[in-house]
Length: 461
Image 1 (cartoon, rainbow, N blue to C red):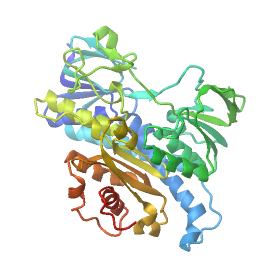
Image 2: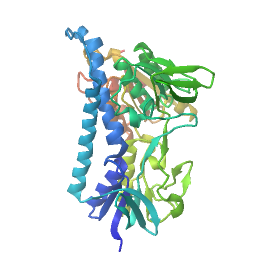
Image 3: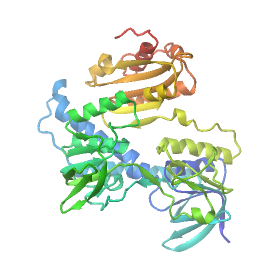
Image 4: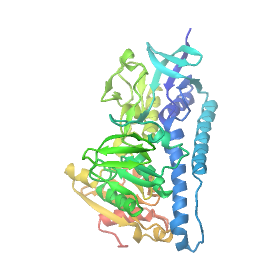
């Protein structure tokens, strides 16, 4: 007889492992099926280890280019690429151990193997020991996504890479073509360039990070060019493949680019294959599993969360969806996820943080608004730490004074983003925001000043 559970989660990325823990906290019998490492892409090959690499890059740039201005003599700076990568891998290992600890603490059973829906509330798990069948009242699909690879792009894992291979490669590229300027493309371009790799950043849109506010995009593009990155916009790639000891990328306009390596950062594709969706009758739309606001699929007892359900493909989106999904399975009243207030952050330097409407989106909606923008060059803390580049920009509704959007670019500005997310979630108006007191000196004061500028009460410009 098949082992029976209240909840079986397939996949242990951010959405999956949190769903399993939340279900176990509600005293449900829970199993989580994982074919590789607990923590999924985010903890092992994405969000967390990449931040370890970016921190190393930031430190190295400071030593090479900025320490002298602080009166610090750090001669002959050098780096050990293998150690840089090795530290990142250690952080990933710690993250996986953390999930194992939490599973043990809360009583989540881990089942190693590849899972597929078996129909009628069953899950078939294939492992080296063979196939076993388990059953559950509720099955949560959280299989995530992978790098999107288009026809003509030949990934070999050595010269033509996705983030999966690049994050752990102990070989530093002499030169690299980075295709795509979303978060992954920008972060790897910054990382490679910081350590002396010649970087060509290719974007099909007219500007870098095209989903961001146009002024943010311009600031990032200026910073990347200043740092030595070759930036090509309006450049669509037709093909990329290995060519001897290097790679060749052909653009649709006929240009050929050559480098020692290429990194594909062109978006993600949901892992919908081989998990039994078609056999179980689960609806898929435009490559993603179709769900309602409770993350129920069209098949009773089957749910889906995270990248599997479509954009925004963010770890914190998956976390939020896990809370709603499990809360509703448990019969609790849980508000829907507010995708309109979903923050986004990119961790190159300068960092990008954004939430809500861009100026262009607000115009497209026909909204009446004012814009407040405060440069970090006018912020005492930013100047003191040697990071005066960038700004905080806010979009304020004229009628009610609501914060329609906030867009930040500069040193570590992603850490400020939660303030605007909280303010928007609590429906704080510009006037109420100005009744708060920001600690001085902090870069956070730029948030206050931007709001003040938007409503005509600025005093520091």
